[in-house]
Structures are given as structure tokens and as C-alpha cells.
Amino acid sequence: MTLMTKNNTFYAAAGVLAAIAVNSPAAKAAQQDGNKGRRPNFVIIITDQQRADLTAREGFPLDLTPFADSIASHGAWFDHAYTPCPASGPARVSLITGRYPKATGTDSNHNIEDAYYIDDLFGVARKSGYRTAMIGKNHTYMKKSSADFWCPYNHLGQEGAKDTLSAENLAFDKFLGTTDFYASFKASPGTVKQQIPYRMVSDALEWAGENRDEPFVMMLSFPEPHNPYQVCEPYFSMFEGKVPPARTDSTALAVKGEKFVQLNRMMKLGHKGYDKNLERLRTTYMGMVRMLDDQMRRFVDGMQELGLYDNTVFVITSDHGDYVGEYGLMKKGAGVPDAITRVPMVWFGNGIEASGRRDDHVCLTDIFPTACEVMGAEIPLGVQGRSLTEMLGGREYPEDEFRSVMSEAGFGGEYFTAEDSQEYVKEGAVGKKGLFFDELNTWSQSGTISMVRMGDWKLVFDMDGNGQMYNIKDDPSEMENLFGKKKYRDIQDTLLQELLKWEIATEDPIPVPHRRYWFKRQPHNYLF
Image (cartoon, rainbow, N blue to C red; front, side):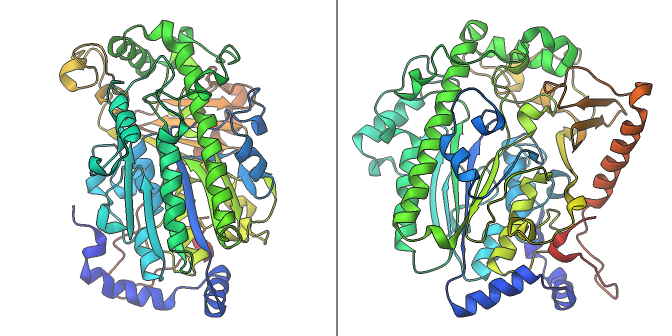
């Protein structure tokens, strides 16, 4: 598909629309500040597959994120932050475009090249006079020319010329290649200095120091704690024997439905000894989270030493979660439970009020429009996220705008079931030797589901009209489906209306009419 950014006919209409658009107070203030001096930097620290509730600030008994917990008190943290889709490619494309997967066309990891949008984070940054850096995992349509500094890493090591690596780092990357993209059941070789997050932070601080005299946008994108589950000492043993049991186990699979049952079946076929290794996987995962948190601290401390902290807006988040043993599963793949749709989100730094925990419902799609207003730039047409600048700055904002949030999953069509086929190896979901398993496959990703989270409640609806409804406060693992029960009819009706409102509000507005009609938008790109 041709990107909208290449549609010259549309740009003529966009110019007229921009002329009549209302500039936000935050954008005007940022522009005025830019005339006086340095505009704020904007840094997104994003992890891959980090579950939101494994933090002491949310009551988890292990201290996995001491830095994020402490910095949250100096800014704002959201415990109702959600991914627009619990799959890496769709979520990351949505983050940098501010658009839901149904609008970008990227509704699976195999549709990234179909992304449809007007402009994105790095495009707006460059047009606004910002330097740009992409360090770490990309997994979007972006390429090397998309950023001024391109330093790619993936789950199996550093990309690019291996002859630039030290002997220690090269050996570590070779070790990652022996994990079958799954796990290491003993401590990884080397020290933390060979781990990908450490190397990325070193690269990020070096680049920030070289560009300290110009405003910049940076995406520091850690590939962890995604599989392969591996970590060095002291993190490998840090939580040995201390990890509390998951709230549910594999006996919950039948309750959750066929997709969950299928996922567990394929996981066992693809990972020999999966059940007996599950607790080791969970322990390693938590060590990885702690290592990441320590490297985030190192990065922010380094930004302070460079004199850049006070003039930088930071956000810590993740693209989606991980079951971490819930329902007897690891990774992600089936459904939209909070374990994989709710993400950590902490904002701090320049202009961020120290408000602590917030109940507002927000989404990864809200990051890009917020960045636009921080940079003093117009939010591009087609963006469906809302700017958080007023909220984060402690100014008045419409609280009702953030009373709910939507997420979606699936690449469409009908559900593909075991009755249709069980040729998991042929499809590529399971490796021939039982050492590989891709949880994002035809069986787990077929069909379409949408969910809305509002207060303590969640409603899920699919293309066949099947409904699920849960009280997340009372039932955090989403085991008791209350949909259709007379006692809860009023809240069900409210949630259905809320989901319908979201679905209509996020219908793609582009391309807008080319002649005559004026396109009206709310300040800060509010939807409701």
C-alpha cells in the first residue's frame, strides 16, 4: 500500500486544514519557549513484553522495578494504561503513528509494511528541527533512513556489522543464537556489560552527549524481557525460590476457551519439558525485569550527568505484556486479558507534575500526540490518540475523556480452529525438532476481538457477537464471565455503549474530503 505521506493530492487539502486548525495552548507555549531557548527533548523508554502488575507500587511482593517505582513518585504513573494490540508489530506501529491497528492496517506482525498514516513520530520530529535516534528493537516499517542515528538490536543480539563488536559481545550474541529463541536454563555467560540493555544504554548516552546542544527525540527500545528468557548473574538467582505462584494455572485453560487450550498445546509441542520448566522461566523473566530497571536507572542517571534530565520528557512503557505463568502460559497470543494488554506507563521529567498514581485510562496511541505538543508541532491528521500534555502538566483537562480505553486483537476472518487443521509445523508455529514455538500464529490470531476497560470493568466482544465481561478488581484473572447475567445488565449496556462509542470515534478519518468540507478537530486531539 502507498503511504499517505506520499499522496501529494492529499497534501494540498491538508494545507488548508492545517491553516484552520486550532493550535493547542501547550503547542503555543512550546513554540514560544523554543524561541527563547532549547525545546524539551522527548525520550521513549520501551520494553518488549513487560507485564504491568509485577511492580511493588502495585503490590507485587518482589522488588522488580525499584527505579521505576521511585521515579513514578516524581511524575505520573498510570495503572490503566493499555496497548492498542497485544502483539509487537501492531502495537509499535500504533505508538509511532498514534493510530489503532484497524486504521494503520497493521493488525499482525505480518502486515507491518501495510502501515497507513499521514506522518509519524520521527517524521514530525525532523520537520520540527529535532534530531532523532532509534536505539534497540524496531519492529515497525521504519528503516535506517528514518532516523539520524540508527543503532538496531534484536532479541538475538546487535544487528549490523559484527566486526565492530568486542570479543566478549560477539561471544554473547552467539550464545543468544543457541537459545532457539526460547530460554537458557542456566545463568547466561559473561556479565551484565554483555547484556543487550547495558550495551544499548551505553550507545544512547554516547549519542545524547554528542547531541546535547540540539533538541532530540529518542526511542530507547529494549528487546527484553521478551523471550529468549535469559539473564546473567546476579539476576538469574536473585529471585530463586521467592517467586509467588501465578493466580491461575493450566486448569484454567478450559474456562478461557479453545484459543488458550490450543496455545498451551502448541507451547508444549514446541518447547520440550515446558511444564517442568515453567517456574524457572518465571524466575528468569523476573530477573530480566530487574536487570532492565537497573539499566533504566543507569540511563536516567547518565542523562542527569550530561545535564539533560531537566530538559527532557521521559516515558517508560512496554508494547504489551506476558502471561508469566497465568493460565499455565508464557509469552502472549490468546485473547485480551490484562496480563497481556495492560502495560506499564510512567511519565517524568520536564514539565511533568508529580501527581503519582493516576486512574485515567490511557493508551500507547496517546504518546505520539503528546510528543507533538511537547515539540510544539501540530498533531497530524489521522492520529487517534489524545495528547496528555494538559493532564501531565497539572492543568485542567476533561476527565471524562479518559474514563475508558479500547484495545483490539486479531487479523480478521473466521476463527481458525483445531478442526480446520493441526499442522502446526507446516504453518510455522512449531519447530520440527520441538525446540521452537511462535505463539503468534493462525490459530491464536485469527478472528477479530475488541475490548473496552472502564473503571473496574472490562467488556470483550468478537465478530460473531460473543461477549465477555469481568470485574477486574474482584476477578483479576478474568475467570468469571458475567456477560448476559441479569444482575449485571445495566453495566453491560453501559460498556457496550462505551465500546461502540470507541469503535465509531476511531474510524479512520483519512483521506478527508478533497474539496469544500472543513474538518473539525478538538484541542489536544480529544475524541469525545
